[in-house]
Image (cartoon, rainbow, N blue to C red):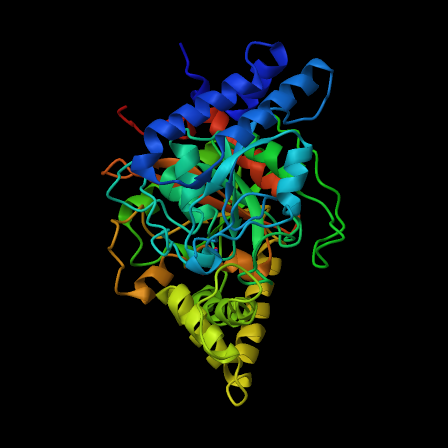
Length: 486
Ligand code: GLN
C-alpha cells in the first residue's frame, strides 16, 4: 500500500476530496515521519504537532461543511525566515533566538486562507546567507540522498523536508538561488517567482531588491498549486506588483511551437561533467517533445557574481542594522547602549553574516559608493537587458541550476569564494527579477540528483511550470525518492 507521505499534493487533495483520508490522518502521517527521521536530517527547527493537528481538525470540519478552499487540509513546511504568528522565527540566527512574531507573512497567510496546515519551520542558512545550510546557527541539515552531504541552501531545510517526505510541499525564499539550488541538490521542483509577484511582507529581509518567496514540491503541478495561492498584489508590500494571481491550468501534450534558448555562458569549463551531460540530455528531451532549441548568448553573465556579492551584502548591511538587542530577541547586558549593540551583535551574528555586513558597509561607504555599489547597479541593468534581448527570440531559457551536485558537508568550510561560485547560474535571474524553475533531470555517478533550470520573462511562471510539467509527463526523474531506512 502507498504510504500517505508518498502522495503528491495533487494526489493527497484528491484523496481528501474523495473522503479517502482526513487532514488529521495526513497531518499525523507527516508528524510521525518527522518524529522518526528528523533527528537524522535536521530539516526542521521547530515542529508544532498540537497546532498542526488543531488546524487539521478545523480543515476536516470545514470540508464536511462544504468549504471549497483549494488546499484545505494540506500540510506544509515553512522556511524559518517567513513569519507565522505565534511560532518562533529565528532565521537560523542566535540573534533572533526566542523571537515569536505577532504577525504572519502574507505568502503564508494566503496559503492558510487556502486551507494549508503548517507543520513547522525549516532550517536555513543564517538570514538566508549561504548555499549549503551550513551557516545555520542551529546546525546543518543533511541531504536525504547522502547524509554526509549538504542539502544546498539557503532553503536546505525545506528542500530536504520535501525530498524525505517529511512534508508534501514547503515554502522557501530565493535571493540568489536559495529555492532553486537546494531543489536541484535534493531532487525536488522549486519555483523562484518573478520579483514582486509574491509579497515580501513577513519575509525577514535579506536583499530587499532580490528576495522572493516561492514553493518547493515533488513536481511542477504541485508547485503551480502552491504558487497560485501565494501570489498577488499586497498593500503591505509596496514592491508587490498588481498582476492578479494566476490560475495555472497545466495541460499534457507537447512543446511544438516553443523555442528554448541554451545560453553558451552557462556551459563553461569547471562545471561538473555529469551536470552538463544531464542538462544537455534534458534539453534534447525538450527537443524530442517538439521544442526548437537555439543557442543564445547572455554576454554579461560573468559579472553576475561580483554584482550580486556587492548588491546583496549592501542591502543586507542596511537590513540587519535593526538587530540591536533592543527591538527583537535577546539582549546581552552591558553598561552603555553602544555596548549593548556591540555585545549583542558581536556575540550573536555568525561569521558569514558578519562578513556580509562588512562587505556591504564598505561598498556603501562614502568614497567607495560610486566605484562599487553604483557600478554594480549599472552592470545589473546590462544583465537584465541580456535577458530582455534573449526573450525577443526564445520563450524560455534552459541551463544548469548549479555547477555541481550536492557537495560534502565542510567541503567549502574555509573558502567563502568557492561557496559563492555555487551560485553562478542562479544569481542572474534575481538580478533581472525574472522567474526561474528548478526540477530534477537525472543523477550523477554517486546517485545524487541533478537539476535543470528554466528561466522566463517577467510573470511567465505558467510557461515554465507548463514546460516542466510536459517534461515530467514524459520522464520519471521527479518520481525517484531517497532510500531512508527506518
Ligand atoms: N547563496 C546566495 C547567498 O548566499 C543566495 C542565498 C539566497 O538566495 N537566499 O547570498
